[in-house]
Length: 173
Image (cartoon, rainbow, N blue to C red; front, top):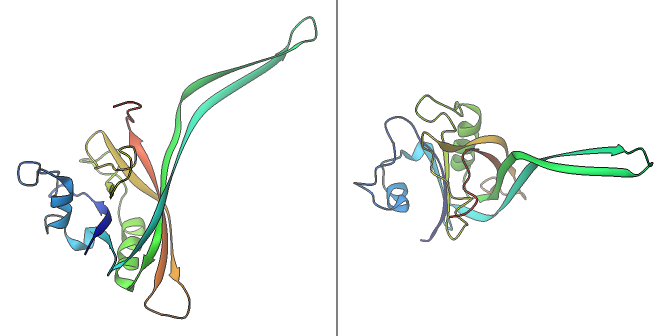
């Protein structure tokens, strides 16, 4: 049984606990975060098919024509516009589709304890810029989800979830 990823929600009673669980994956595998607040992507539960990261910068471009009739164009970077991650795959039962829907629709995406977002993401072998645990200074929020049945099997559900990162993104480690 190989875990390929977790999408999870932090609440005040489940802050990161490195003294009890030195590795985040150990914490996620335990019952510390309730099953109703996390989705495991495993082969027997479903198939995590992939992810796509999209980072966009705020680039402002100004153009003008000088006195000689020459076009002059200059661009400046004004910070990050967005850092989104799409995750997608299938679930072999409706329970996990319901959890995803609840995380998106019934959960406040921000809290006093996690002002940048209550959602965390761990994907095995993903870059550090994708795997983020929520803290007081960083987190994800769910900005869009899609769930539906595929084929004629009522037990197979496909999903897509778009997460937006909030907080300080380190450019270099």
